[in-house]
Amino acid sequence: MKHCRSCGRPAIPNQLIHFCLSPTVYIVKVTGTEFLNANDRIHWSKRAKLTEQWRTNAGWAVRAARVPRIHGKAHITAVILFPDRRRRDPANWAPTAKACIDGITDRYVKPLPDKDFAHVIRGIIADDDASHVDGPDLRSRVEPGIRVPTLELHITDCGAEL
Image (cartoon, rainbow, N blue to C red; front, top):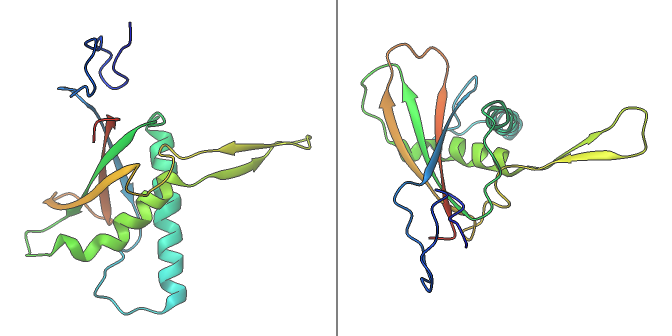
C-alpha cells in the first residue's frame, strides 16, 4: 500500500492526486546585518556581499533546524519581521527572500580530512525553479523585540500536489 510522503496516511487506490489536509510546515528564522531592498541603489560589491551573507545564513539555518530534504514541490512564504508598525511594502524585500531561497537550494562541497574524497552537502530543495518551488509569497509582521534584520521562511512540503 502506498502512503503520502507529507502526512503518512494511506493513499486511496485509483486516486490520481492526493490532496493532503495536513501538509508539513517548517519555520526557519534567518538573520543578517542588513536587508536587501529592491529600491536601494547600492554598489555592486556591497550587494554581492549581502547576498552571499543571506545565502550562507539561510543554508546554515535550515541545517540547524534539521529540515529534511523535500523531494516534491515546496511552497515558501517569506515573512519579514520588523520592530515597529511603520507602513512598508513587503515586495521591496524580494531580493532578500530570493537570496535565502538560493541558500537553501545550494550545494556545498566539503573536502574530507586525510582523504581524496569530498562530501557533497545538498540543499533541502533540488532547485529553485517553478517545478520545485511555489512562491515566495512575501509577508511582513511586527515583532517588537527584533534587533537584527530577520526573515522567517515558512517551508511547506507539498509533495507532488501543486
